[in-house]
Image (cartoon, rainbow, N blue to C red; front, side):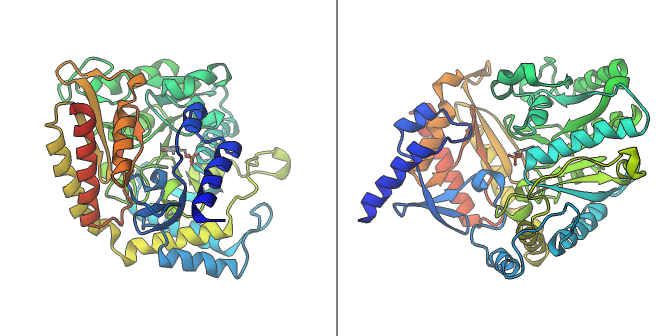
Length: 460
Ligand SMILES: *Cc1c(COP(=O)(O)O)cnc(C)c1O
């Protein structure tokens, strides 16, 4: 079979057999799918041989680029030992070494007073890391002999994953509304979305009115609340919404004051994306539980961890018959191949001085953002480190958004794809999240194509 014929066949088979996530399949069936066959560095190649700059790190996971020798080698080496064994009733070598590495990292970067993070619970993806955190918090209060703490606090515009518990604490209406009747009880605090403040206030004169609202929830419902969950510094899937400086610290103080477990969902922000290893470091905040996934294996294998404080872990200790065991686990929990990949990924941070080298790239991104803010239809630009969003608006003065049915974000993204850049929008927000290893030259190229695409679509 010729190569063209084979490619057509793959396109047909995709449409025949695959149901894609977050995708209106009717639209997909009318489009020519991009099918990726290879990757290298921060580029991905389709079956026709066209290369794209991977502007969203293959959905926020790739850190050191594709086909990174050290991670490739670590997986191959582990393969020559064992691919999988279980953590239920057994342990394995890479899972132990990775847990040690993570706890060393976390405890040197996130220094108490509040609590210290000492135990690693493995799962497979960001959503399960969140489920684990929620269940642990819920059961913690039971073990403590406190009843009635059955609800959670989360934020409007929050995204914590797609399993039902994670959806319950989610706050993005178009994703989450459909499942309303299935969800457990949550109290929603305002999103720290200064560009479109829910409370109609202006930062900094507002003096954190949104935190006052959160405090009101704690005051009124404190004895019903098991935990608060938050994406530190940036609500990523909600539209790259960055919180103003001091907000996260304020949340920590409220959780401490009202004795509420603080869960930091660092699934998107963890592992250098924000310019520091963890977003919580920026405001010297130590959560009681931390969820990590996406970048943990550098984008190689599905893996997640929920790191919990000693105080939580200790309450699950008891006699066998007391049934204080944490009854949760997955088939692939602590998968050795994934843990080996993660170890190699984390070692590269030191070896290649990733965080230090990020500074110049963040500067390039930030001066570019400042410049595109002058464009006629760019309402707001936001970033923390190398995570950025450009919010497009129909009318800059009134901040009137484009109707979402107009698919303005998608039109910009398609234009960029035609010009060799792969990105994905979140509604009217253009997301920029390249691998941390991207060269300055490739970063400049990425940003140039995105700017041209915004201009072509919104001013053309
Ligand atoms: C992506 C994401 C999740 C869910 O992770 P999955 O691996 O897609 O299940 C959870 N929380 C945050 C903050 C995320 O960005």
